[in-house]
Length: 153
Image (cartoon, rainbow, N blue to C red; front, side, top):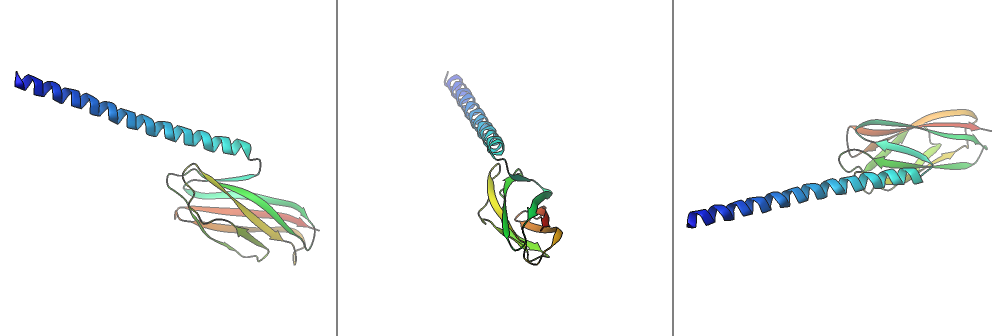
């Protein structure tokens, strides 16, 4: 009789443990789905330039169009982390002193985004300008290349 009760208690504990595990898995799935929906909603609301960074190189064209000589123009770019781990923008390099970035070095969680500002100073430039800037990130395999185009008049 005692053995029967031990088996019944063990089965009840096993069923309760399985129910708890399924609830945790279901909860994580719900959280992931909510995060994806939130990221999609942020993308729909933002009408500017978007760079989705996963693993590998992300290339984005930033067209400043027509720029008056001697002025500084700003373009905002939304960086979205669509990878599997948090992302930090570490550094940027360019061959031209005519452009620079302003951005936060805070980690970007998976599914989240930040906005960065790319400035272009047209002093010293004339006519069609094409250049690029590379942004290195905390994930070695993920980098961002911003291709810059402007017509300085």
